[in-house]
Image (cartoon, rainbow, N blue to C red; front, top):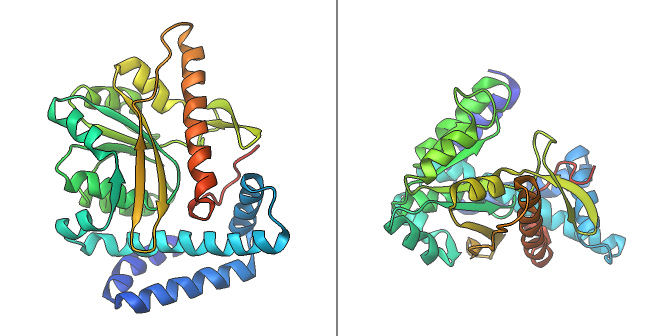
Length: 288
């Protein structure tokens, strides 16, 4: 077990044993220390938030980065404590506006593609869907070392989600997800960061970047409705707002339709992130 894996293992074990106020205080203090020390992740977050909020002064940007790091560490605190939460508590701990659309789809066996940004608490959102009794499957980045990936896999599967790896699986993720959509599954996909770097070029906050083609391609190939989600934190709970079904282009080459639909998602993400920039957990390079 390497240092990163050991740290996550300790987090899942120790943080759950701490009283809630103590844990929150420790994670807030940790976020503030990380902000003061800087580091690559904090610098990336600052660069990204500067692109999102170009009108801010340097002191205002400093304050936003501090809020962003507190939000980021809040996500980890909740993730560490999530496995000990009961189904009833999970259902009380997250709110999703527009969830009736997903429920109606599940009731008639219609799959749903849900694209979301790295905002608020996406793991609790997935656990909430599972706690509603709806079938759910998603894709996970294959972390290194393998032991760390396995811990995250066990964590999410323990919440009731089916997980397939982005790379290294026996079948392509697209094929598996298409099959599951045909069986009425909810398929949430983090879609604001292009992990392989081979995605669709879009305009995002006034600059060019790439985003994964997966959500748009799945919706076009399966005929399943596509939704975008705005994710953020309220003081009492992480929340989300579902938008859609998004209009799907019907004319032109498949590649062109994927590009149009991915740009639509980027526009929805940008609108939500602009409303809640402190809750966008993007500590990696976003604009290349």
